[in-house]
Image (cartoon, rainbow, N blue to C red; front, side, top):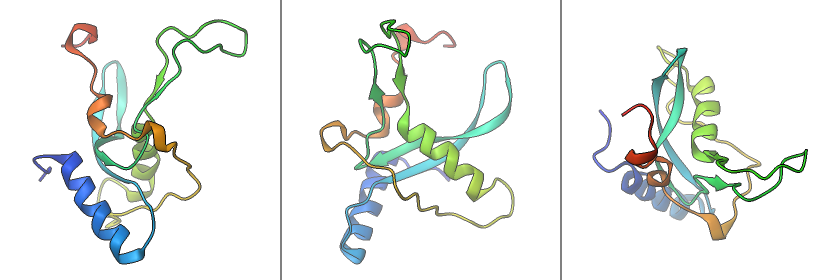
Amino acid sequence: MLPTDPDRSANRIRLKLTKHFNVDIGVIITDTMGRPFRNGIVGFAIGASNINSIKDERGKKDIFGNELKVTQIGIADELAAASSLIMGQANQKMPVVIIRGFSKNKKEISNAQVLIRDEQEDLFR
């Protein structure tokens, strides 16, 4: 069963783990979904705490000097997808994955709600 408020659940888990292990960590709660026009399921973030869930690259230049107009990187979703490969989808019994080496920008910490596209911009609703 999915948590009623995944961001709040992620924060509660983070606070308990931070207190127990005395470390500054981020927590992502994941699920899987299908995608329009694609076969296969992928992991994505439904809840997050103390992590940069999205990185806005709009206004920056690409390697060819073109200005990026819509590029926002779903960091929490990218990490969730990577962890989903390790956790498995059937009977692997791996409910937790630890990702090391990902550095966060304290100024850009957000929850998973920032990943939900506004209805006016969503092509599939």
